[in-house]
Amino acid sequence: MIRQTIFTALLLCLAFVCASDAAKPSAATMPEAPSPEARKSDPVYKYIDAARADLSDGKAKLINQVMTLSTDESAKFWPIYNEYEDELFALGDQRVEMTRKFVTAQAKHSLDDASATALADDWFRFESQRLELIKKYHHRIAAELSPTRAAQFTQIEHRVGTVIDLLVASELPLIRNPQRS
Image (cartoon, rainbow, N blue to C red; front, top):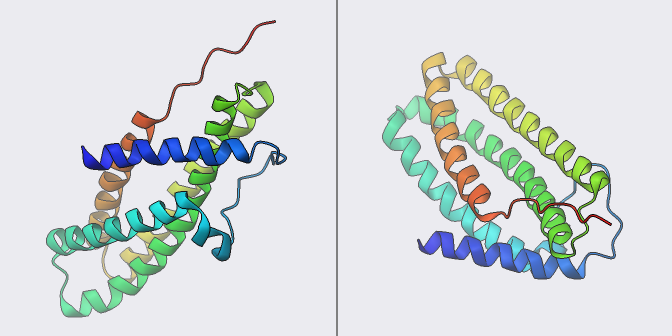
């Protein structure tokens, strides 16, 4: 309940932060995260980074409980996992920026056909990239540890990702009907 309240506050924060960014031109490509310097002063990314640290700790505990890696397996697995997580977080930043664009358009009642198409294209691209990322690391873990270890990794990531997706989806408003003239 507390996390959901915090997530709702994050979305409201996004709405206020994004409303001030509405004058910026909208790109047709996948949105980029802010620079490391700008990220430090962005309240959304401050929250995201703190939530990611908590999530990483929880996922590491879950992985250790489920996979019960030997010392040799741990020495191989964790460096691979850390690379995966870095790439996953970079991809997650793209989702944050897509959410900013969507919340801005909703707040300003400016979600027209062109911006709806661009947002949908960005979402499909994000989902494809996320699937390719998990497949890449599944194959790598299968090769360096075992197919069973790779399947465990994939299952854990799928479950955690599904919960995160559900939290995000449950807090985002549905697209309003377009304004008719």
